[in-house]
Amino acid sequence: MSSIRLPPPQTIPDPEEERESGSSGSESGDDDDQNWDDWVSDSNEQQECRSLFDEKVLGSVEAAISHDSSTHSFDVNQVSTKLGLDFHGRVRLINYIRKNKLTPAQARELKGSEPWFKSDEYLVPVIESDPLIQVSLDDWSDSEDDEEAASSDPVKKARLLEKNLAIAQAKIAEYQKLLYQRLDVGGSDEIKPKVRDDDTHYFDSYAENDIHAVMINDKVRTASYAQFILTNPSLFRDAVVLDVGCGTGILSLFAARSGAKRVIAVDASDIGEKAKKIVKANGFEDVITVVRGKVEDITLPDGITQVDIIISEWMGYALLYESMLDSVLVARDRFLKPGGVMAPSQTKMLLGLCDASEISKDRIDFWNDVYGFDMSTMSEGLYDEAIIDVLGPETVLSNAYAVKDLILKDITTRQLNFATPFTLVSTAERRTKINSFVLYFDTFFTVSGNPVPPETEVRNVKEGEAILAEVWPVGGKAAPQRRQSQSGKKDKITSFSTGPQSSPTHWKQTLFMLKEPFYVTEGTTVSGVFHCRKREDNSRELDVELHYSVHGADGPGETVVQMYAVR
Image (cartoon, rainbow, N blue to C red):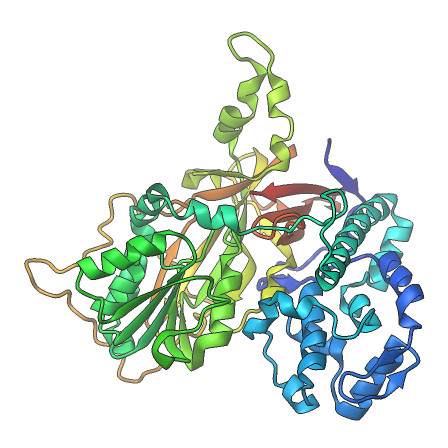
């Protein structure tokens, strides 16, 4: 399958304006099927529907929602959107309110992180055939702009219809599941919906030793966390710390050594049992408590309800692969006290132009001639998958552009599906073929938990650089502590990069190989939009869509669209 080609963009983005307004990434709402909504509307919206808070029965779903909004100041659609609820989350919200007879004031205080939002108990309708739980959120329907664009562009129309069909099928399966649970029906495998499980393989993979050896031996990663924790004793001294996804417990051990009075280490995989033994072997069992389970479901031990600091190494390939950040944000909303610190406090997802000729030769072109045989069939589909590999600094031929800037104290899970305009300007000294885009991320820790100043440069660790010198005791003496600014205005920053300019990490870089490479010279502009969202069939994987246009003397050329899976 070749790339999709569209007409040139109507306007040429201004790089400076984009960097000011677009680098943090624009949130893209989920674009579900309007036809599905129309269909549901025909069968459900005109049914009588009872208010969530009183006995009044209205003539339609729309009338019931309007009544609750005007009478009780509670709009279930707006609240569902605000809390970032998916289909099941909205169903649980409605049934919880009905079953527990919440007052409007109590309902307005919900945070979306309450444990019952994960409970199957509230998937069972309180009111039989409740039309309110069968109607999709308005926020998840196609916008008029999308429909108008699709009506005039056959490529967009085909893609929109294909996407809408998949979403409609998923929603039917979701509602089927609700019916089976409500009626407690057995039934054959032919009709009983398959329970989706994105977690089992993920947690099982972290039960093995090898993956933890790789992570701990990543000196850029581990030493950066150690540097932040061990050189900021004023932050950690007497603090209550939550370590989300603790693994072997290495970050918890750092926190205990830095003076934390209590560390709660949480992990849902079997590695948690080994973490308990490691804690005991190092004499920290009075400080560190290992809790087995998902952070969405656990309660903190000994009556603790809030923590001062949350530490976690949640980053995956392309930053967001594995979706562990979702769990960290749940932990933040459930347990972090007001003014508490997230560590890391900020990450930036960066995009650049790349000449990955060697990787193309090794991964793709290799199949063209294998001992004199044509095995090019084996390379089919390789352009549809992101490649994870290590690049040299000389392969990057533009300045990096931040397509997503994640401020951990503020970001929401809904903002992790996004689309961001970008502009890249070639730094190639001579005419060079660009055969890929490269994606990597930078990570920042601040004592305040606030974002770093925009002009802050990330630390690039060079090969052979001694990055542990200020962390580990030498000759039995503790590492020297730097005096912080007396004015208190300058935030102490620790950072590291996973880019080609820095020493390689276990995250490597993420490559999006181009089916149709293009040539650039110094100053050539490439603009477009970077789309990223969780995959429909596995929320721990990513779908990436790149729309790009190479600018010439007459302005931008036609827009090329290529789609990738990160898995």
